[in-house]
Length: 260
Image (tube, rainbow, N blue to C red; front, side):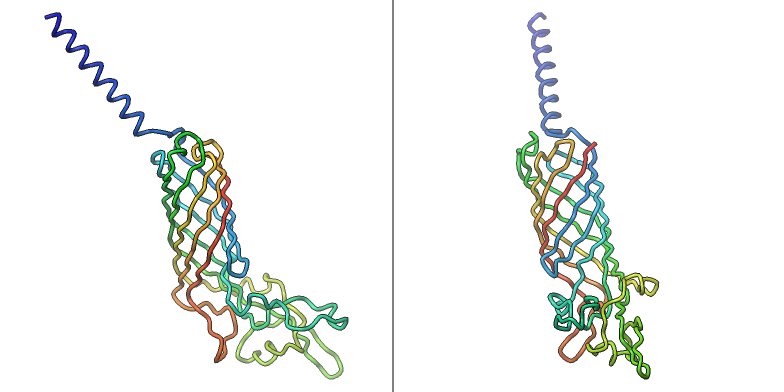
């Protein structure tokens, strides 16, 4: 009977230790449940940028899921990149404002999505440098706002400055560099903004210094694609110039935030 009691106690002790070890392994490295992160993203094409916020749930030591929203100024046409002014610098142009020749609309992106961040470095569990793959995707809305130019319109012997957007009727003046005095402010056409729906997806390599510290400090490099239901009219089209419905970018980003 004494031997049976000892055997029973030994089995119970083994079961308790096994359960504790399994629980410890399953929750390895988990100190927090959620994280809130801000990230600033710089794009390779046209030096566009975006600001984004993410609200994440830490599922395990190597997996975090999150919802994200962002505002991006990265939807650009190749013809507008590197051509910000269309006249040579001289004293007669001293009062002129810079502009992009042929630009028809601003395009700003609103993005809403869902993502998964999965760590592949055991150091993440002991507050070291965590290496992860970060995937997200979701809906995009392009806010297309008219691009106004200040044009010098001659009236008898006087020149009047008129703020004008591109239409088939104003095309001749809008594309005449001798009449252009510069661009108007973006607020000029803000009430005429149109919305074009679409979607986006991105994939990046995520480097996190202290993957389970209280404060998030991370960097990321990756690729991002936006696709819309129709081409965005960013630039005035011609036989050699057309607009497109997709935008592909490389990016680097900095992430700062806090875990709870």
